[in-house]
Image 1 (tube, rainbow over the protein chains, first blue to last red):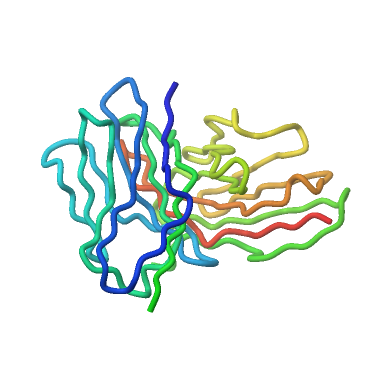
Image 2: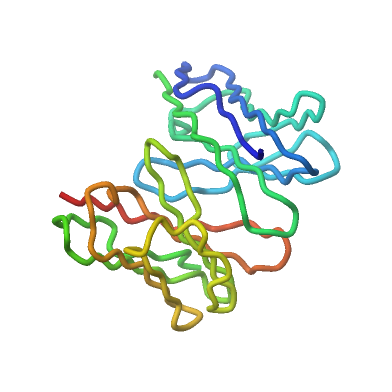
Length: 113
Length: 114
């Protein structure tokens, strides 16, 4: 069955520290992978997406993600976290050419000043 | 661009009442999606429209839920009668519907059914 797992429900980091949010997926075909961010009271905003090509993908707000097929992972990283990055982050997977994304349950990021 | 617009942003109602949520997709987008977000189930796709036609409503939880898209710039999600377990955040999203396009989400409607 298709699924997305975000093993960390909450993560707390200090401002300026590096960040890695984990995402593992189970998918039969080549997946189309996304990371979205949801700030409090807001909708989801796309950070980055991957389908093919370079396995290291750059997104907005200084985020990047690396696709590792052998590990079925698509982890999100940022070298230096800012207080404004405090939000909930969702990983999603979907088949190419369709609309049916499967979302993970999210990781809530807290940033300490 | 104004983005996806949803109204109301917050709705509190009593069990048994009818609730109508509204969505205006981004101009030019021909695909529209309704999602529900709860702590227990995360983000779930309820229904997908393409060119105003419902393509996939397999995620609609039961007959109490209905959705319409009378034109390219407006959609509604109706719950009648509402129940406390319908309390959730409901998101509308849209995209151009061409291939694997990014879905753009609205700010959501937070529904509380007492």
